Structures are given as C-alpha cells and as structure tokens.
Length: 144
Image (tube, rainbow, N blue to C red; front, top):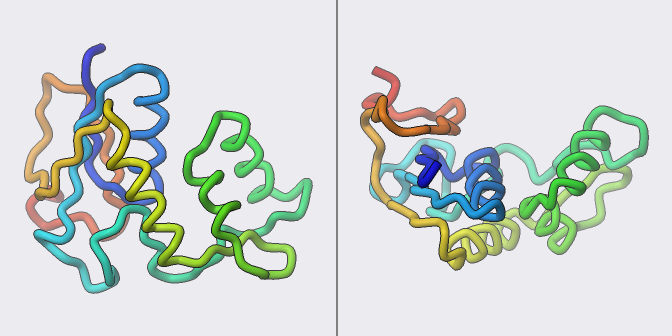
C-alpha cells in the first residue's frame, strides 16, 4: 500500500492520517475548509470541536475512558494534544478548543508523510484506499 486518501480533517480524519503516517503510509488528506465552509465551523483548523469542548468522562471504567485509554495506547496524536490543552472540567477531559485545533493542525501539517489538500473532494477514486471521515457536515458534492 503506497498511499491512502482521507477525506475530512476532523477528529477521525486527523487521527486516521496520523496513525497511517506513524506506520509509514503516505496520506493525501483532503479538507474543504476554508475553500468551502460549513454553518458550524468557525476556523479552517483541523479537529475543530464545534459543539462542546468536552471529550467526555475521564473516570476509569467508563466507556469514554476506555476508548481514550485504547487511543492512548495506540499513540493517539489527538489524545496527547487534548491532555496538553486540557482545562478544568470535573471528571471530564475538556480542552481549550482553539488551542487544541491549532496544535492538531500544526502537527498534521508538519508531518512529511501527510500531504494536505485544501480542496473539496467531490468523488471517490475506486482504485484508491479511501477513508471517508467527513462526519455529519459532508458536502453536497461528495454525498451524491
């Protein structure tokens, strides 16, 4: 496998790109913002949290904690940055949203195996391995 296409640089797409690169796989990461915006996003940064700054419970033996623990063990970029940008939130892992997104964007953009393409992906190439990580705000062109 020489290259993976990942469409969407939100939480899932950014983490997928990072994990591929850590394993020596070249990535073409498509992010339509800022070329095309959405009603929910305020910036062009990757992994922008639009509804809440919380990554849910950080209490042991809960489902959200277990997922974060699995991600930590897998070398998660996003979880490491979440810990670095955390803010007080009781038993939850919450982050400074702007700083979190800025640092994710910086790390992804600085990774030599990840080529960021600031353009809308309007179709999927059948001959390529493609991860679709566009979330609920998938563009009309791609959802056709």
